[in-house]
Length: 149
Ligand code: 4NP
Image (cartoon, rainbow, N blue to C red):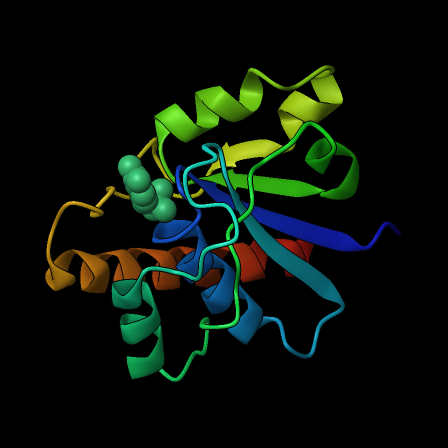
């Protein structure tokens, strides 16, 4: 079976998707699953995660400080088996780069029921705590569904 490779995608790849990557990695340590993250925008390429994301992850025992932002590319459809978008805008930007039904089928919103992980870049630290909780719960669900595949 093809190795499972999961890509978490947000806009800047400094706030939400680095957290999603770190949280999922922490839950699949014993499994043969690759996890990465990317942003649809180029603003922060090469940058470390936002200090507020690093801090909330650290609070829950997860180190994401080594991550570096990169931009989503068409090639990611070749590399990854599952692509999770944080919000509908990210979803649409990813889908715009899809070149086949297979590419399209790999992409889903990370939360259930069409919900979005809010963008708290222009907000305070409490938004990042909320983001962590949403992502932690949904990553538990993702691990279960990957195990069922
Ligand atoms: P992210 O948050 O998409 O969760 O990484 C953002 C980071 C940067 C910007 C917007 C959202 N920005 O406009 O620079």
